[in-house]
Image 1 (cartoon, rainbow, N blue to C red):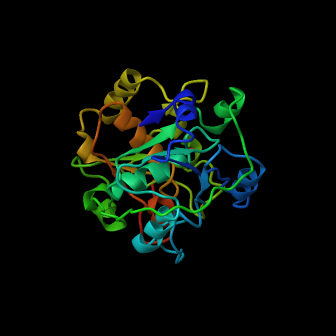
Image 2 (image 1 turned 90 degrees about the vertical axis):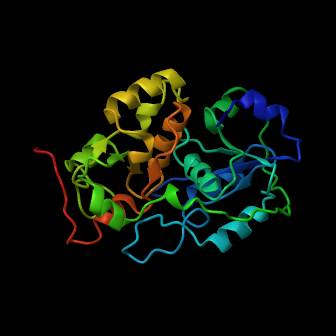
Length: 279
């Protein structure tokens, strides 16, 4: 699940390894393509969080709805993804965006996928090679085979959000979760019954993931005995929620689910209930 910069450097010329750059800035979607053009890991392809890892928005389905499977598969095939290929994904935000593609590939049946621990900042800090050269398209053989139980929809969340049968974990920063601050979505607060685990809590001070044993201890405490298959993850738009899924997998807690629409979908309907903590 995690690849070190040292290990990736040994495989830069390996045709069975595919590197994908997912750097992004939520408030400036042009940032990712710009920084990729300025320099990236040799051989890395770029995939845009808004345009490649998300589908069309309707105003009711959240800020980053899942893309159509055929279109997404075509983009992966242009980058050479297929059976037996090791995919390594990186960003410059401690996996904040890379985990979205990690989850999507696993959701669609490609398990040989990892995140670069420490991401692009560590790669550069260690003096490893950087290029502006864009790799040529490759021919892949990726066929999506979705694991239907890996994702749930807004109706599922509405039925079970306050049920003991489900733990709904929200990855947003505490101020947004509580409703005390909201700078992105039109409504502040959280889904009733949800609990908060800010995605950055999965990281050490150096921006790398905490040790598996420490993550296991923290999630066991958070989940209070709930089994992984009872856990549904959300955030603002189904991106950083994947960070908590990734951390749970690292901790040996496999089987939790993603609510892709997340808060941006939930709050788009004024009829849905909203919880806020007292100011």
